[in-house]
Image (cartoon, rainbow, N blue to C red; front, side):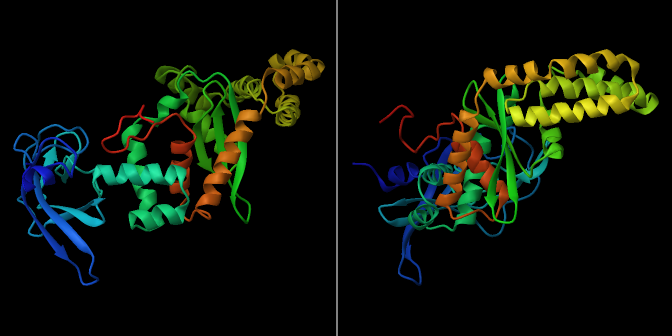
Amino acid sequence: MASVNTLCKSVPNVKNTVIKNCNLYSDKNGVKHIRIQARPNKWHENDCPFCHKSCPVYDKHSSRPTIWRGLDWGGILVEVEYQTHRIICPEHGVYVAEVPWAYPGSRFTKDFDLTVAWFASYLPRNTTSYFMRVDWETAGRCVNRVLHDLEPERSRRLDGLVNIGIDETSYKKGHKYITVIVNHDTNTVVWASEGYGKSVLEKFYKQLPPEHLSEKQQLRVNLIASQNPRLYRAYLLKEQLRLLLKLTNVDEAEDKIKRWLWKVSQSRIPAFKELYQKVRHHKTHILNTIRDGMSNARIEATNNKIKLIICKVYGFRNIQNMLDMVYLVCSDICIPLPNRKLNAA
């Protein structure tokens, strides 16, 4: 027969943990709690929460213990208790030492955060909040932690982009929009941001991986911008035309071609005169190429998913929580549930 200590050790569901004690009590509302006193084992008690390396101790254990909420155990609220201390990492500085059962800065166990994120991906807001006994703002923070754990380098979504779809989606009354960019080849959201228009798209293009400019090339461009404004203007016109040809929306492409032609006509740069005539003459063919190359079906489908996310939670107050939900749901990320295989039915 398993001992109480063995049963309690399975609650945090992580390795490198030592169980010291546990007790059962009821709060003033009559809700039962089981509080488990735990600690990391001696090989991991001074780990950095970011690089996970063992570091020198910065100060002693805190006078008051920290409590983490775990998944309910048969309707009983589970809590993990430990007196934390700080370490000094040569790379990241002074931080509270990592605990194996929770993400940095969280007051919930990893299993709890993962379960909340899974519920939030598939169920309405009130169902998730009621079942997990947390408010929706707390659920949003759980989603944020899970997303950053499962995908610490989100910029990798931008690697190898070839075919993209761009659209704005309203998420709130009063002309509140987010701009969403979808990879047509994988049918996943690769980038999303609050707002719309040229300034938002410029933020996206600046984050693209350097198939475009190396660090040395970027320094040269900056030097040209400061010393030869006319040449830098020519470079911008060239880049605008290159990005224009990657658009998938014909109306947007036509509008941008008109703007580009106007800018070239006002630029007074002789080298662009011939190119201006060619683009103007072949404008219809350029639009046909864009029109027949790809449809907007996937970006519209993604917009419907986003609107469903917003509908399920009756709107978002925190824009970052909404963007995290979009990244999590409109992707190929699989959220692992405790003690279950990802490929299980």
